[in-house]
Image (cartoon, rainbow, N blue to C red; front, side):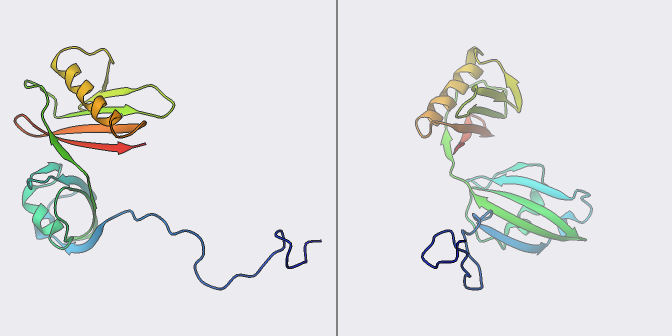
Length: 177
């Protein structure tokens, strides 16, 4: 039996309290806010991004963003999620994002481009959320290759995403997988 104290297999009582590793933080900032501008807006949750220049991407009324984000205390850019808690009350969480502004070939009609390179799978190319062929030609193909090079410069496995933020302006994020 394993009853010797120097036997590593022996059961030992531990001090009361929390043990083990803490969960990684999901949000950089959270707040519970009252948003009068969303009282007639009948959705249970909202997801949006606030870019470095203050512009907003996502399905959220622009006039409600200041009320939703004022108590977060974060400087853009960040991504946010708001969940209705009843009436005009919303729980809001935000996560800072590392983003760079890049130039892509002019004349692109897409609003978002993505390249995903998994550790053990096939590279995926998406234009406005729709899968496209790897050998896509023209300006869109050239833009996807720019994203792939940017991702490979940082990580072996990654998702590189460019979102249009204005005419000729794109915001690039590269996240590891």
